[in-house]
Image 1 (cartoon, rainbow, N blue to C red):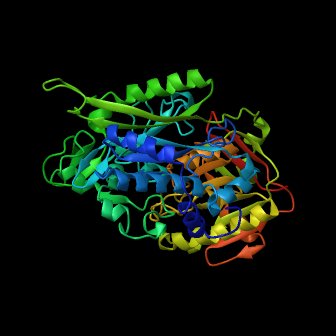
Image 2 (image 1 turned 135 degrees about the vertical axis):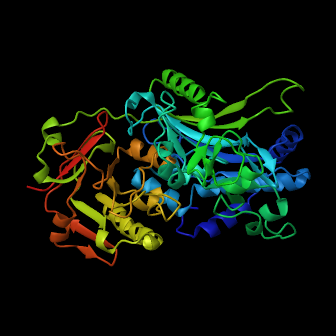
Image 3 (image 1 turned 120 degrees about the vertical axis):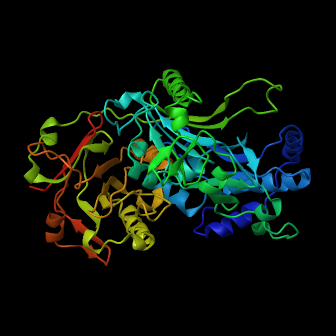
Length: 523
């Protein structure tokens, strides 16, 4: 486990291990009363730390419900071993290094949770899943940072964690949804795929008759999760109230799930027409959670829309159920911000953002790693991600930090939206910047486990849209002087990436409550 063995080899050894008989007896008793799939997930000391939560680093496996208790036992016990094995994977070890932890400090329990959902055509999923944060560093219009923010998506919440196009809203301003404010945005920036658990045991257990444990579990905890088209599931009636229909004849979106045309995940019937009190419930969870924990919180939830015949009698009316799955603290850093730094004239700035995540001054960073805009094509995003992972490893080995700049959404699993890095691949960055290009503008991302890690490490995140329209005379709110960087000598240069090292650390400041951030050019 402590070696540099590949993840697959580590998993193979863990799967050969034996669990105590009493645990197997307890599991068999559990299967008699639980008639849903089971999520097998970690609950560790470091994940629950108030200062450096390890959100989303370890594996979470979902096990479908099968009628044979012995087959179910085998799948669940393998998943438990797989969760423990994931503590020792390469990504987890890199994360430990980045957080100055040693693996001996970690203590882990495993939680079994019923998976919220219903089965539709061999696939099991909740009506919707979401994450909420009681601090919103991307407030829109009259929203305030303390109003909180939520992201929701149809299907399993893994879609949000993987950086998919979920719907973002403030629970106190549920009608204020940027993604559905214009037709073009609604068609471009809403969910088209969704995740669901495959219920076919043969498909999920690999080779049922095989003695090789690796045929029954994979390192990738999403190996038995299907990526489905929203259109297909909506046409089966499984996404009522969450989707609207695009009427191409009249070029409008109608808030129902009938008729011809593309189904668009707008949640309009819920957020605007109140078919289900989602915004009020999320606000209650965030407010209650923050009061109880005495600090800002992040929550996970999932819900079912419509009555559940198992829960209520015939003829009873029921809008559905909302399940509160998890809560953890967000670290709210309250360092003072140097106002003189924040008011530096534009000609002395390398970067300036009006949508900045983070707070305070960042010191000791003298290196900029940036994706070359003139060479950028989203078709190369996977190659760029691999190159950045190698670069990051070098920074970790040298115990150095850097500023990372690139187009689109960092960490997205969709390569069309941005560079698909996982957190351990950029863990040495102290400031991460989403920049825009004239023909490549993506809405800023928000609310994934990725962001939990950003805030807990005090890593800043800038969104810089230099294409945004502004009126004459208005101050510049977005600035990225790439020509200045290009004019500096590079310590590393490839087809896609340049690295510039300055002799003195760069001055970096972020005002989290105003959402502004600056990086100064060296004197």
